[in-house]
Image 1 (cartoon, one colour):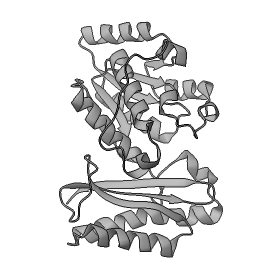
Image 2 (image 1 turned 30 degrees about the horizontal axis):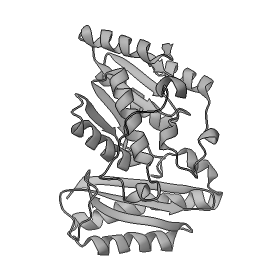
Image 3 (image 1 turned 90 degrees about the vertical axis):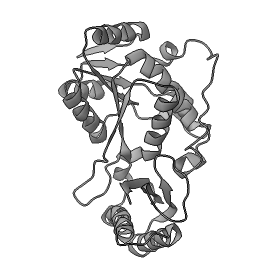
Image 4 (image 1 turned 90 degrees about the horizontal axis):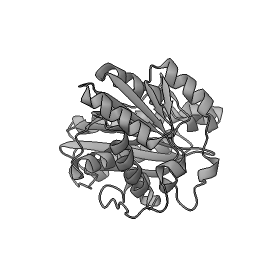
Amino acid sequence: MKIITSVDEMQKIALKIRSEGKTIGFVPTMGYLHEGHLSLINHARKDNDFIILSIFVNPLQFGPNEDFDSYPRDIYRDEQLAEQNSVDYLFYPTTDEMYKGRLTTTVKVTQRVDVLCGRKREGHFDGVATVLIKLFNITQPHRAYFGMKDAQQVAVVDGLIKDYNFPIDLVAVETIREEDGLAKSSRNVYLTAEERNVAKKLYEALSLGKEKILQGERNAFQIKMFIEDYITNNTNGKIDYVEIYNYPELTEMDQVSGKIIIALAVIFTKARLIDNITFVV
């Protein structure tokens, strides 16, 4: 594995790989790698000749009440995990290297952002889109890998790739789960023993909602109420939202049809957990 910190060097390497007829799989991250990231890497390894993993804590996607400086970082551990999982190039630029001076253009995401978690994170996905445009141009991937744990981000990236005609296949990788169904997350360590025990009910609620739809229920409001009641009666968490949308458009519907997402966020004492499932009705 080779560690690259220069934008120009990374781009030259990527262009050379493409000129030789080889394929590039790209996994963009902000570091502090976990099993979800490793799953993306493993999927990329199966599909491509080379893997580029980027680690860049992007300041543009942090809001005024989100502390960029305290975001967890452990580059030594990340380097070890990347090498152990057969990453070919680890792209690890500094902020100054990525943003040399003030940007002369800005990216504004206008769709798929004013719902779910994006509702409370104004400007977040503008920062995500900006850095991804840069990273896509730098790494020149054939395929880019994102986890469905953050399905809203996947939807935004889908729109970005189509809007700007990037010749990139978006590969959405299913959420990695614990044996009892709880979505794996670094936030899970903040759950108390009791909260961890009932947190599995979140995925159960999503699954039961899906089952209700597949059995014939089509009223989105009724399905949401069913899921909310299940969470309220079986956990001590506070519901932030339960939503049902078209996917990846993330638009509301009264009667569910087509490809949909059921998504939720639930707040426990020291952790806010998100989860979702997507499927075709």
